[in-house]
Image (tube, one colour):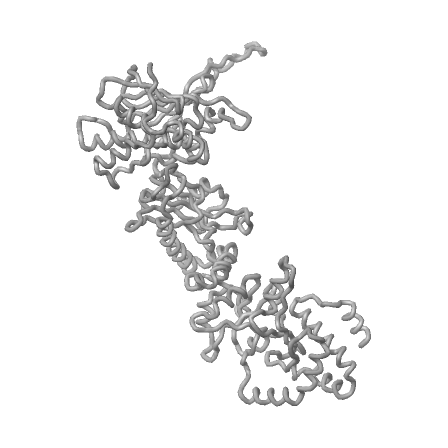
Amino acid sequence: MKTKQFKTESRRILDLMINSIYTHKEIFLRELISNASDAMDKLYFKSLTDQSVGISRSDLKIQLIPDKAMRRLTLVDNGTGMSKEELENNLGTIAQSGTLNFKQENEIKEDIDIIGQFGVGFYSAFMVSKKITVISKAFGMAEAYRWESKGAEGYTIEPCDKEGFGTEIILEIKDNTEDENYDEYLEPYRITEIVKRYSDYIRYPIQMEAAKSRLKDKAEKPEDADEGEIPEYETYTETETLNSMIPLWRRNKSEISAEEYEQFYTEKFYDYEKPLRCLHVKAEGTMTYNALLYIPAKTPYNYYSKEYEKGLQLYSNGVLIMDKCADLLPDYFSFVRGLVDSQDLSLNISREMLQHDRQLKAIAKSLEKKIKSELQKLLSEEREKYEQFYKAFGLQIKFGIYSSFGAHKELLEDLLMYPSLKEDKLVTLAEYKAAMAPEQDAVYYACGESVSRIRQLPQTERVLDKGWDILCMTDDVDEFAVKIMGTYDGKAFKSVSSGDLDLESEDDKKAAEQQSLDHKAMFEFMQKALEGKVKEVRLSKRLKSHPVCLASEGALSLEMEKVLNSMPADKKVKAERILEINAGHPVFAALVKLYAEDQDKLKTYSELLYNQALLIEGIAIEDPVAFSNAICELM
């Protein structure tokens, strides 16, 4: 029989599709199953307009038959089938989509979801096959035809016998090579895995006929049977349905129980714990999509590492397109797991990527608002669960504010929580502001490695004495984030360790100013004695019972200095340090006396007080030996 050539530049285009278009060879099965689904959709569509067809959806199915001995994988469907002309047009012309033509001719839109668009998916089977045979009989036609091809050389078409309508595709699987194991596409477990991964929600049953063994004689073994007798087994064929067919996210919410949502999550995303929250979205309008989103109860082991990949599974009409579509989630919501299914996506020729990212952006923007709303709902309705979520993923929310330079401040700020030094519990910024005294004009915070360490900071006493609360910031990113935010609902953030806390009365301020002038020379002497370690020595307006503390001025705080210097870098940064002395403490009187009587000892006292302030702040002393010797000398 004469071999026909493909109607396009066959060798070049087919070679391109086999070797370049598809990323993973396993995709071929997804494509063939999708084509079979389309063929059955066409027949079902005909049955809706022609009563003589006599086909219901329950009559339609796809069969997969692996044969290891013959190295064949056969796919059978009882869809509309193809005539000789359709075989010629659809398989003899690369990139000719019979499905697309059918949709255009019948003006099919949303009612019947037909997957195929480009007409190239069939040829992906050449990635794993050395020869493909297609036997097809169109519905209502008497003759069947066989199409055969070994690749770019061309194809043949001839009449053949076939019972019933539909299409049978026989793949003769390639032999193994050093780099590729083609045997896997004949293994029932691997076929099941691929179907579950890509085609689990095809609306028709995908069945596989697998050979199994059983005892030939099912009767119980007689008591007097020979112990050495070897039981006889026989081989039989069992049909198993591989796919779920109906996606959970396409069912009505009212028909789905909480247990079903939880079971889907634990099985689909391999989590042993049920999720904190499930969000089921059905969106229509500019972009029509369904989504099933989950907020996990705990962080994955690699969540805060470079190895973690964010993203939602992306489906088009129930067919998996991408396992992790990162563009659907912003980084600050990267903890969300789930999937999106849309029929409006413009896919590329391999159906592995999108042609227009604006479609994804529209869905992502919608999902962002819904995730934020769901988190706020969790906060207001199930506080304990929200706190559990926040302990697991709150750090990511803070990074979201900092990394975007505050661009997403309004979206994320109401999701933040911090330990309250006054209330000894987590509070939101809204709760903090609601509890503020009328005369309080700032949101006070303190940084430290733990709440207990912050509670010991001398700088906190005066604020707490006023009856005002202090937010404890124990994560490295905390102060960077609030510096970026600047204010919350009109109230500035103010560190208890930076700048002027402005806690005194006018009379106290005047008295402090006079005292600073009276002792200006002593403070300048102490500052010089510390040899550039501090920018200034001055009277403190923030200390109550402690003798000394370190404060800072400028954009870089002491806590930020510690964080930045803990990172690998050639140069270290240094905040503008201020050594503050408490005029109400007995140490101050001793300093004044030493300035008048023994300035050499005052230098030693200055070093001791500076090192004491460093220890209080959790900063390493530059010369521990000198510090120890100075204490011994004074003792």
